[in-house]
Amino acid sequence: MVLDDNWYTEASHDLGLGFSLRIKSKLHEEQSAYQTIAVYETETFGRLLTIDGLVMLTDRDNFVYHEMMTHPALFAHGAAKNVVIIGGGDCGTLREVLKHDNVQQATQIEIDERVTRIAEEYFPALCDSNDDPRATLAFEDGVAWMNNAPDASVDLIIIDSTDPIGPAEGLFNEAFYKQCHRVLGQGGLLVQQSESPLVHSELIGEMHGGLRAAGFADTHLLSFPQPSYPTGWWSATLAVRDTRSLYAPERAPDFQTFYYTPAMHNAAFAQPAFMARILAN
Image (cartoon, rainbow, N blue to C red; front, side):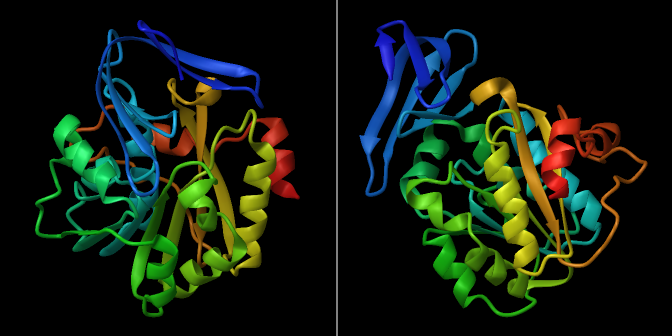
C-alpha cells in the first residue's frame, strides 16, 4: 500500500508491523496472469520490487538474501553440478549460483514470466547471468516440474519463493518435499526461504517437520538480517538428503561477495534458545 505520494509502506495487520520507504516515483505497475507487480524508485534503497503489495527486493539489501540462499548450500555440498531453482524470477539467486565453477547446469523454474522480464528491464544487474550457457529459464509451475523430474537427477534444489500463499502455496507441504527428496541424488541438499524466526516460528517448525516426514535425514535453519523484510530478520531452511556436515570451507570464495564469508556461513547456523526448542520438536 502507498500511504501518500512520498512513501511506500508494506503493512501487516496480522503481525501488527510495517516497513516504509520514501519513494521518488513509481516506475512500473501491471497485473500479470498471477499477481500484481510494481517497481518504485526510492530515495535511499534504490529500486524496489513488490508483488501483490509485498516487498520482494531492493537494490540496497538484496545481496544478503541472494548470497545466503545460495552460497551456504553450494559450499556445504562442495560438488553440485545440477542445480534447480524453484521461483527466483528476479534472477538474483541464479546469478549467485552460476558464480560456482562446479555448477554445470542451473535451471530456474518461475511460474510468472513477467517477473523475470520486469527484472531484466529494471534490475539488470541481477540478470547478468541469464545468458550464461549453463542457465535455463523455464516458465512453468514448479510443483508440476518437480513431479515430472527424473529420480536422483539434481544435486541442489533452491526454493526461492514468495510467502506460502497464492502461487507459492504448493511449495510448503510434505507432498512437494517428497518429490524433492526423490529428485535429489546421493548427498543432495534442499534450501528454502522460511520467513522470519521472530514471527513465523510456527511455520518454520511445520516446514522442518514436513521435510523430515518426507524422508530428509536432517534439517537446519540458517538466519541472516534482511532489513526490507518483516522484522528485519530472515531465514532459510536447509534439508539434507543424507547425513553430512554443513560447515563452510576454510578458504574464502574465489569470487566477490558482499555478505557471505566462511565465518558468516558457520555463524548463520547458530540458534537462539527459543528456536532451538522449536526445531528440537
